Amino acid sequence: MIDAALRDGTASRHSMFELFARRLSGGRRFGVVAGTGRLLGLLREFRFDDAELKYLADHHVVSRETLTYLENYRFTGSITGYREGELYFPGSPILTVEGTFADAVILETLALSVLNHDSAVATAASRMSIAAGERPLAEMGARRAAERSAVAAARAAYIAGFGATSNLEAGRTWGIPTMGTAAHSWTLLHDTEEDAFRAQIAALGHDTTLLVDTYDIEKGVETAIRVAGPQLGGVRIDSGDLAIVAAEVRAQLDALGATGTKITVTSDLDEYAIAALAAYPVDSYGVGTSVVTGSGYPTAGMVYKLVARQDANGGWIAVAKKAQDKGSQGGLKTAFRRLDRGIAYEELVEIADGFERSATPADYPDARALQVPLVVRGEIDTAHEGPQGVAAAREHHLRVREELPVRALALSKSDPAIPTVFADAGA
Image (tube, rainbow, N blue to C red; front, side):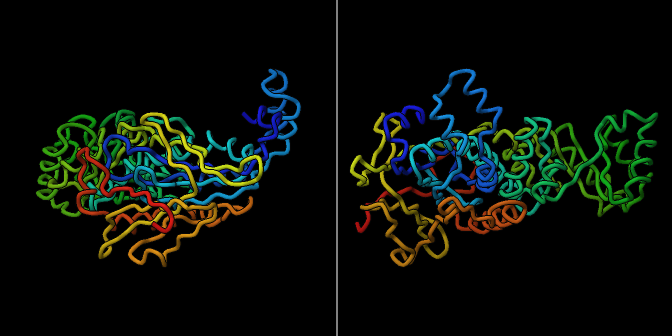
């Protein structure tokens, strides 16, 4: 498209793209925006180097003119969007990208690949966090994801309410608290389960968590307390009917005097399994496959569409796709979340009659403005990047999640928790 646009002169037309989701995946009642900080960091480094340009030239993918354009590519436009950690609903203008057509259209795959993946993980993680209540959650899914997506998934899960990750690279890069326990191979390495437990205690102290289900859980718990004493930090259960086993282990620990020893459960947990364990004596959860794959919905289904552009005379016109079930709303949009005594009841998206934002929070005193500037004429707001951006996104998510109506907290499939209403400016 850039090659053709450079040829016919439309590449430099000022354009406005919007990233949004037409619907929420899997009948979820809300979505969680994640990946914004990662996207901004990737945008900062988005360049075409000599090897990439050589490949395009050698394979005759684009013309010499386009190669020159790509060689000098720097995004100089502006991006406005929902803060990372914010909730979104169908039609929410999650990102608005303004720039020349060529500058903005080239970001489509980058923006969608990041936000579709991270938002899917964050949405699933938030549901799990709600189901877990005050009990801690740890992300442990690196072995069920590609190496780079595993780190991104750990980041998204932390933003949406998980308290730690087993992924040390995520800890190093994003400042996420890290944790872990021994695997079954540690026990199998030793001649006896007792030898394995003694070695772990010697290395890590009594606060460590021992994996007790390699052979027989009841014997494993007895051995763990005999070796570590009642001050043992925790035991982990990774098999069996977790509800029944957790109750039995709790009773056994208490009978052995280990009333302060915590029980962590793992083994293919998702939000439904976590909710089912709410009434049982479980202290924390480790979640792997389900969280890194979006609990069955590994993409958020977001799209990136042109919603406005300049015409040949420099005037602005709204444009929209009209295909059945895949349409879009043209025009520049300003989004607000309307609240009644602190509880959200409507996502209001105002469509401007021109191409400069006119609506302000003062126009909707019962609402919270949802969009913030992320990039202004090529300058990236660094507050959204790095560990500080992750911490701010997590704090924001946990705060705005309190605005959800009670019906949004249910795990069953349903319509979005609040409707999205489109309104013309001044209407």
